[in-house]
Length: 480
Image (cartoon, rainbow, N blue to C red; front, side, top):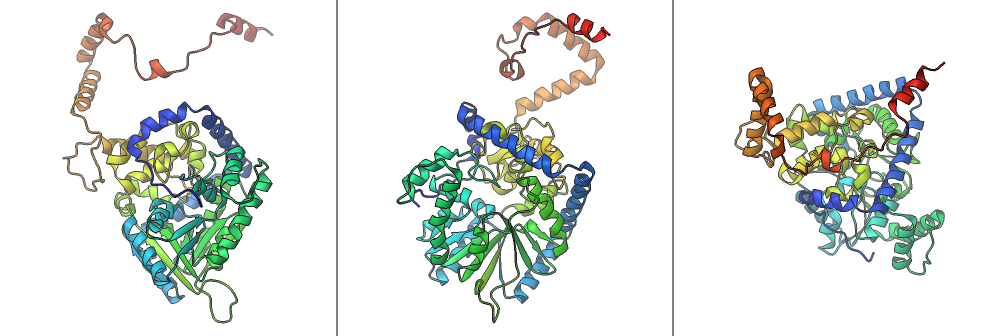
């Protein structure tokens, strides 16, 4: 792979990158088409509105039950996995998770790791960490493989290379894969990528994957995918390392079925993905394939901060389907890279403050129209708009104010001047006599206001003049 993995740019530069993205017509056209396609695919998978709402109720109940019992379920999961021969590791921070994986690789003298899709590994920047220490990590998911080759990060949590055109991929493959000619034919490009990756599964010392869900009662790790790379990554190498956010556990294996149903239909508009991988331990005596050693890294990395707050805990219900991103008018116009975080879009705006701190991510909570589309399509009913408002409140809270569950970076956007303006506003509108004086002054001194207004008056699209008058339209309506 010619391009090295890159560190994420800082989310503190969100406004500048969003402005750059808005000025890129190619990117905007690409994302608009992709989002329309994914929205229509999802609609096609839920023709029965009543069934959808029943499924959402069930999905929400399963996730809330798991979170209500999270500490005991994690202990149970560790016990069942350990009994099955899986080695369980707990990582409080991203750096600790990287160190654990590095120690495992070192103890096996590993030099090559093949990876199935894992957003948790993106979150901790595992590729970069290991490459600095002489261990190569190759992404085997086709989308991840493409963005790794380009030296980029995923722009979508389900479809990492959604921002790339066929021409972009054709140029990348021609440049980076030996004896590959330029083509824009999708089937040819896919086959080219698969041929290039096939031998890597055999040569890898370690296979690494994410985990979609883990059942505490059976100790089963459940992975969904479409390409088979996840199955190869977790069965061909002798060592398999899985990394999972601690919130992905559920109480029972049967609870995963409705969640998987919601996940695949909401994410890619599929009734079911091509592969459902259920992993319950290393290779047993008499078995012909599978890893001889399995590890699970349970990652916190700020999740306990969200868990400690009763309202913010619902953030952890997420099943990583990406539906909120596909329906977000902001994400559809600027794409994922503008956010500068592992998880972009509405879900990124509510989870990133816990992973990185409000001081670095406060602008993301304001990157929303609060239209409510994200909440309406969330398959497990995360109240994303309400959480965005809560995070805006915390970002503007006085950092010296004592609260029960303070967030890291609380008060990052606090302004005494803004606080005074809002106090004046609420005082003026809360007292009729003061409001009448304010209205009298505003109408007589409006010439002192700036000639160039900000916000809506500056950026709105001008209304097109009507081709016919309102009187004509009303007259036509009243005619028999």
